[in-house]
Image 1 (tube, chains in turn cyan, brown):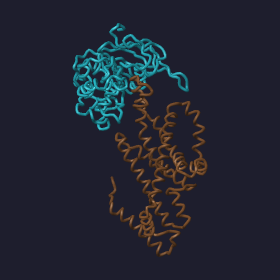
Image 2: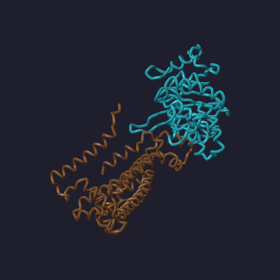
Image 3: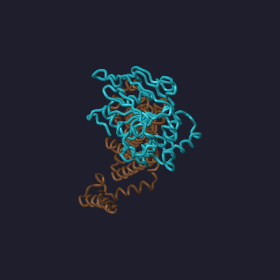
Image 4: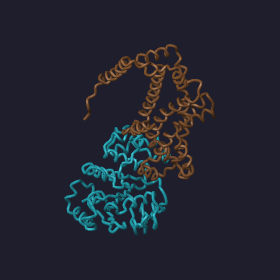
Length: 260
Length: 265
């Protein structure tokens, strides 16, 4: 770790918030890196500072101390080469599905015409061919999140940040989207940082799981997941899977509200 | 569960209430200068229409209303955008707005007529004054209503403030702005009529007053009927524009919003 192939490198990161009751320490001494083409999951309970960390990585919120580097360049503000997928799809209801996917292209002035075919291709990768002229409110929650995923990838970002993207979906939709995300990742090998509060989801998807504990948010352990891909839903019954899940769960006590 | 609806019953109820009105006035021998019968109102409406006297006055009131609506709306949108965009603009303009808002705009009409004369201009200004506030308030609230997550998304794409305004805040504000426009339209008509009451050479408001002076109450009712029809037609135009522009707003926030505001006058 820490070598030049890292897409993202975080060192000594600290984040304090000023509130009426004084200073709140949200993140302390966060250190990790994500290599090119690696799928890393950060797992932790609600309120452990995961979303704050993601906002710092996306350049939306400044860090109090420490450094965050993307391809060896410090992140000081929003960047054009990061794709973000939020917990809710965050689509624009007045734009069609295709126009929603093309939003980053419009914002960054990258040429609609040249990227139109790319957008259609991404929509077919996520299984939404034929839906390009529909509006978001005509789609189910799972389909909307697929549109958001396509939008996160359209401008060919160096890194895809995903903040509990399937957290608001029902269990079955979530499982099928996990399978699809793995398939898409195996095809395209994007560099992904995936934040979740589901231990099973993290172990299922990631090459490496970072464990985050709350108050203040700290990364307490890195756990590599060596289970071969493609992983099916029956991977839950593999002994190695259960072992890793148990090991992760031992970091959290029951009251932290973790999902299995 | 939806209760059963019968359109025929609806019309029958309307006809019945007109019949009761007609019968009551005849039986109780109420003089026509107090309350005319519906048939007398109908006759007055017919005579006025045939003589062609309404048309000229309708055009004048309509022109005053539409010009006042346009003037008030444009200024309200520009000022509202400035208020929403800048905290310091809001800070410095706030005392003026509170002062202006606490004055009933209708009470300014006599002053407006002194300043702008008996012609069209004073009615346009009076309509614009009354139309101004509902759109101003809705523009500010609408532009500030943009969803935080969507703003974060735009920022994460390194969008400029102008892009965020154009691609996110303005469309997000449209339901509010359309609601404000619907109210502003109705208010403009009120403003034009009030201006005509205070002093005018033409227009439906002037005509109502002249009918009033000659105790032609049936003629007055006929004019009220025309005004109501005008209000409905103007509103219908905006509702159809709203349906087109806000096809994506399934909640039709605008409709509920406009209804609640209109009730306030």
